[in-house]
Each structure stands twice: as C-alpha cells, then as structure tokens.
Amino acid sequence: MAAMWRAGRLMMIAVLTAMLACPTASAAPQGQSAPSYGQPPLWGSCQQWVPDTSRIPTAQCATVTVPVDWDDAANPQAAQAHLAVIRVPARGQRIGVLMVNPGGPGASAVNTVAGMRAALADTEIGRRFDLVGFDPRGVGHSTPQLRCRSDAEFDAYRREPMVDYSPAGVARIEQLYAQLTRMCVDKMGTEFLANIGTASAARDMDVVRAALGENQINYLGFSYGTQLGAAYAEHFGDRVRAMVLDGAVDPGLDPIATRIRQMAGFQEAFEEYAADCAQSPGCPLGTDPTQFVARYRQLVDPLVQRPAAVSDPRGLSYADAITGTVNALYSQRYWNYLTSGLLGLARGTDAVDLLLLADDYHRRDKSGYYSNQQDAFLAIRCVDAPYPTDTASWVAADARIRQVAPFMAYGGFTGSAPRDLCAMWPVPPTSSPRPASSPGPGKAVVVSTTGDPATPYQAGVDLARQMRAPLVTFEGTQHTVVFNGDACVDTAVVNFLVDLTAPPDGLRC
Image 1 (tube, rainbow, N blue to C red):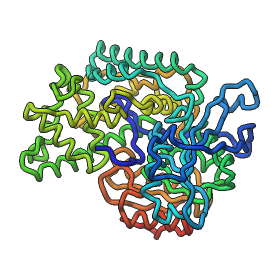
Image 2 (image 1 turned 180 degrees about the vertical axis):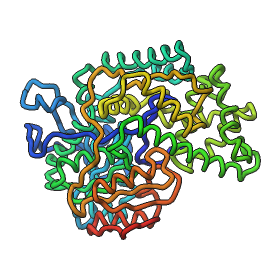
Image 3 (image 1 turned 30 degrees about the vertical axis):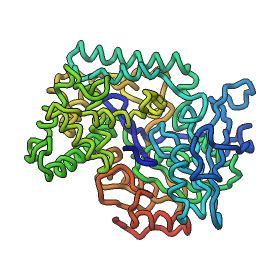
Image 4 (image 1 turned 90 degrees about the vertical axis):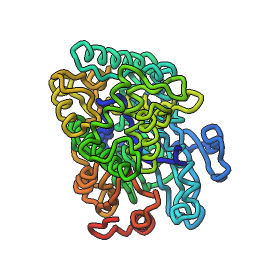
C-alpha cells in the first residue's frame, strides 16, 4: 500500500487536537563556526541503514558530528549528536548537490533519498546532481535517536479515544499528555529535548554542507522541509544556489491559526473524497452531499465505546479510524482504502484497511515495530513555537475547529477542551512565528497545491510573497507534488534547479 517514497507527510500526535505544522525557526547568526565545521566524512556502505542498495549501487553513507547544544560547542566534553548522511553521486556532468528533506518533522531523509534516487536515476536531476539527505538530530538513523515510547506503549496510546471533553474527560486527556511528556524526559533528558528543534537543525544543515565540501547547496524541501529550508535561507542565504519549497508552511502563523487553517483544508479534502465516492454504487457515505459528514460520524462514533473487530487482534479503535481517514486524505491514491474500511464498518465486515492506514501513518510495520517518526515530530514541534498555556485559548480553538472541520468533531461543543500537549512541554520554545526572508534574488521557488489538506494553498502564496519567490500552482487534491508525475510542475522545477530559469509568472499546472 505504501509508495516507494512519499514526500512531506506531516504527523498527527493526537486525534482532534493535532497540530501538524510549525512556524519557521530561527538559526544562529551567519558566520559563526565551531569545531564541527570542516570535518571530512568517512564515506562507506549504506547497508546499515538501507538494506537493499541494489538500485543505488554508488550510494555512500557517513555520519557528521554536531554539538547537542550549539551554545556549548567549544566545550570538548559537551554532548554530541551524530547525523546520518547519504550521498548518491551524479551520473553525468555534475552541477553540485541537491539536498532533500521530506518533511514531518521526523521523516528520514536518508530513506527518502534512497527511494528517490532510484526513481530519478535516468532524469536530468539524477545526471546533474549528487542527491543528498541527512537525518536531522534525533530523527531516523541519526543518534541518539529520539524515542519516547516502547512499541507496546504506543499501541496503548492509540487505543485512547480522547474525545470526552467534560471536565473529567479533559483532565484524563491532559494526564495522558503529561505521562507522554514524562516518558520523553525520562528517555531523552531535557538537554537533548531543548536542542531538538529547527533552530538547531538549520545550523546542523550548514555543517553537513561544509562536510560535503560545497560552497553552496541546492535544496528541495517538502512540507516541514519548507520550514527547515526557510530557516536555513534566513541565516545562510549566501550558501544557497537554488531552493524549491513544496507544500509550504506559513512561518508567520501561530500554532492555533495554523491548526485552524489546516483542519479547514482536511475538511475540503474530505468533501472531495466523499463526492468522488458518491459516484460509485454502494458508497458508504451515500449520495447526498448534505449528509456526508453525518453518515461518516454514524460509522466512526460507535468505536469510542467499542472498537470494531477486524482481522487483526488489536481491533479498530476510534482513534485509528480517524487517523486512517486523515492518512487517506493526503492523496487520492489512498481513497480506495478509505472506502474499503468505511464499507467494512457500514456492513459489519472487515474494516482492517482503516487500521492499516493508521499503521502506515504511524510508521508501524507488520511485526509491531514503530519508527521514531511520531516521537520526533512531537518533540520538534513543541520547541518550534510557543503554545498558549491557558485553557481559554484551546476552548476557543476547539469551537472554531468544529465549525471548519465538522467531519473531525465528536459530539457537541462542551465549553471545555484539553490544552495541546506542547502547552505542558518541559523545555521552552527556541523559535517564534515570523515571516520568512529571501535568500537572494532568483534563488527560491515555491510550489503549492490548491487542494493540499496538510499545508493549504494559501500558505504557499504567503511564503512565496515573503521570500519574493515565484509561485507554481498545482491544481489538485493531494499533499505535495514535485517529482510525483506531473510534467508541468516537474519541468518548471528541473529548469530552475539545472539552469536557474525561473518559472513563468503565474504558472498553473
């Protein structure tokens, strides 16, 4: 069911209260150096991270060391993090490196590049660029790997509905959040958690650039990768040759405003899905557009009290049904699986496809092993912006989200709501919302999709304006589009990366 590689997936940390994107982080002033700069990587085999390298036989892998706390970089006894880096050399007349970040935060760039490079091998990108990915600190194959929960603890967390917004129910939800927070502190310590954010990752990215021996980089960022790219461009703009940002995060929005805009985007995607489903006989949501949300809630709401029996002994929880639905809304390729799962609920048959969609979202494999992507997402987003700590802000947000995304709303508005988990995070934020800046004339292009649920179209419009960059508009319902099969978009991106030719003004694909 999963694609060979998927760019830009943003994560949900809790059903109904998910915050899926963060404002741009600030990096350290340009020009500061540390002992980490200039370290030559010891390139070797990638098989410790990518078991099957048969399609990328020239791939090389290494680690680059950075200080955990950049303010303590001169201390030889300071804690260090080791960043996993993959490089697949260009196959023709080389321009330079193309560094890729797939988003999340928390997704592995090493894994993404391993998949992308095989797909792009015979393209102009594969011929002209070394494809490079590094896993940010705490993420993927980098060490220490940020991990808060065991597999069993993650399974247990997914069984919690977290929809009771009575005072007692809210207290229970916040207790679960506090428990998860303690797990992160116990496993990782406050020093590492305090330095996990995009502010540190942007500085680390420049260390990787230097370790590669490059004066400038080319960069392709998807989703959260646009946030990392914007942070890098702000402070290391002279080290950027060309930057493509696809599925933009608006760095000027606060977390609540971003959440509301995003939930509205998912509602639009749900309506697009439901209208498409209604064209087929037997659609579980019926054929009346005014009843799509009500029919959906009739199917999933009973799972709060009783999970559905499926062909997996875990059963299908309410939280997993919602997460599986959200996962399917990222791409039309997954709509058939959503329909299959909802039909299972409607007919009392096997709705396991919803569980599999939720597993895919949470990166749980068939053996029950989770990647650390969700834990990394949680820790990074909590330090990438200040979150209100008062209850009233979250009650008002809940009321607004119920208006813009009714398909996500369980029950009625109670006047009570839990605070976001990040409101009780044990370390302070290292960034705050502010508009992005340009790395320089002609250095950046923004791509935005009209029906992108996770990073809605307007965010791309705003980011392009802030960075004074051309905007490529893709008309569709999906999350990110570059190198995903659209010739119009890909031609514009390739021409920019290879020849620095800007897309035509107002290009729509």
